[in-house]
Length: 157
Image (cartoon, rainbow, N blue to C red; front, side, top):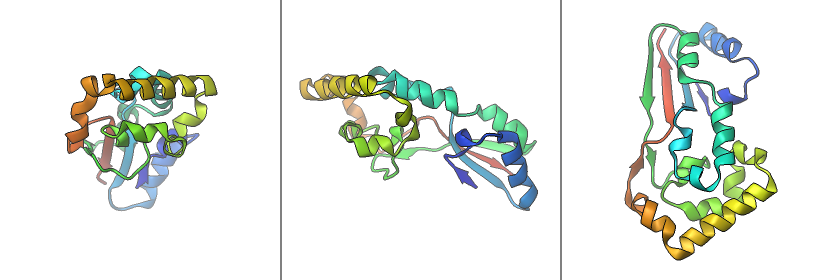
């Protein structure tokens, strides 16, 4: 099993092939679908962060093709109180993304320059203070689970 790491591998095919070679059971990959990353509200506030994420993650179809014929791709709902530090984990808690330590838990932010980060902080803070974020996305504060870009790919032997 690998979680949130395939986008950092230098040779996706070699890594997934090795996972398949060394196990008799299923191979499981938790990752993000790059085609869906930009659908998150954060794109309005810091497109640079999500453009970076989308460009780094391999396509789901590429992963499935390497793993073989018996592959299932499942959406993974994200709970409102998700403790992991990826961007969509804060779908209903936008204030968390104003904390540098929360952003730095997601590697895409390390590719975002200081000016873009400052613009993001100013824009989100302003929209939170004026209620603009709440008008557009406030309903997410009470949505128990968010269907975002998170995918679980399971390849049976």
